[in-house]
Length: 192
Image 1 (cartoon, rainbow, N blue to C red):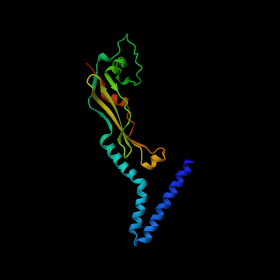
Image 2 (image 1 turned 30 degrees about the vertical axis):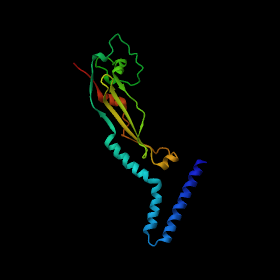
Image 3 (image 1 turned 180 degrees about the vertical axis):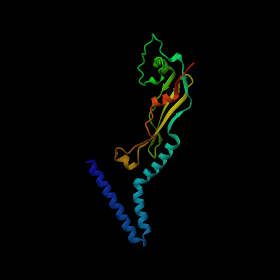
Image 4 (image 1 turned 45 degrees about the vertical axis):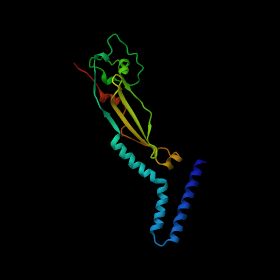
């Protein structure tokens, strides 16, 4: 039923546009005004998509990506002692911080110091349907952001959103950076 309503609306819009072009062509001599009228009817449902895509690409190029502000060496105090067991239910795997001798990171102690935050998307541009999501790694002791992933999503134009066209959203940066990848760039095993 919804598909039929969409088809009727599109057909009515097409008839309205064609009628306007014909009326302008009859009343005004020349071809410029009828073509201008047709362009206006084409741009009404699509102009925000054109502007939105241009702005989204600009925002992606300037502001999205993986940013490491400070690298941190992880010392012995953050490693499990031979008699200790890792009781953490922390999901993120930190196997890249395992020492050559097999000593693993104490994820509970590590997570008390370093926060991996999963922020919800926030509106970046309401008019152009662009949202921003920041995933930082924060040192809880200093409240310093050590690194972060900044992602942007574009939800399409108003016509796409009225009819909820699936698959119309786009995001950046490419490659789907993860907090684990960010952690690998931020932390390293401190050697004596």
